[in-house]
Amino acid sequence: MTTASEVTGTSTAKRPAAVSCHVCGAETSIAVHGPPAIVRCSACGLTALEAFPGDSERVASYQEDYYSAGTGARFLGPFEWVTSLLRTLRLQSILRRAPGPGAVLDVGCGRGDLLELFQRRGWRALGTQVSATAARAARELRGVEVLCGELPDLGLSPASFDVIAFFHVLEHLPRPDLYLQCAHALLAPGGLLVVEVPDCSSLAFRLLPLRNLCLDHPNHLFFFTPRSLRGLLERVGFHVVGESRFSLEHSPYTALQNLLNLLPGAPNRLYRSLMRNAEGRRLRRSPWTWVHGLAALCLALPALLASLLAVLLPPGNTLRFYCRKRLPS
Ligand SMILES: [Zn+2]
Image (cartoon, rainbow, N blue to C red; front, side, top):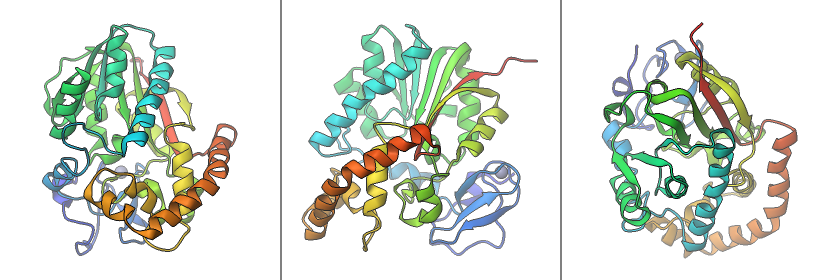
């Protein structure tokens, strides 16, 4: 089987003669001619970047430039505030299926805002992060416990969590199957797994994948569809018991940004300008960013309506599965 470390190298690296699936090792074929090139596995159906960044490069990319030191924030003040506010929707959707209180594990917990909400309701809350910056902010500002490192290396006790959440994490991992296997072992009998990823079966991704917000190169390594994600979860031993194709937190903005990406120039200009990092500051100084901002005001309502259509007409641009462990037959 090909491991992540065997296929390290940047997307600009010379293409190997043959690339096998990062997860199952079967033969892949080019699904999108990049750069970056995207390949689809002939056996398990997973779609991924042809070449992944190296592990140290990947972890380094989630440190100071991804999350702000001190606050762990990613976006400018008002946008960060709205993002945090919308976390209550995540909480409510989980509590409807797992009323608790119990123990929750949020894998890739960002700055810990979902965990803080659980903790306030009497849950025992634990997060994991590869970003030391975000982990520190979550501990100091949100008062939640966060372990820094890769989930399979953390030595957590089997069957010790009632809820395990992966919100926009799985697509960042070089081996999502290993993380899910670990989550399967950590989940208590009757527990709930929640997985949310960008839905790359969307019309926008199929038409213009290289200008789609869900590409997020080079942070996203896998590009899931409902079928490929369900297949992965079932192979690991989960049973999908519920799904959602609309997220107020992600779907409308993704639709809006994909409309803006029809404008010429580098894609995702507005999204990147909302970041607190140096690139965001540089982009905000450009008049073109303000043109994109004005266009966004005009396109906001159509984008909201387009993303709401996913409630009736799947696929949308965001996919959430609720899963239970499959009972042994
Ligand atoms: Zn495969």
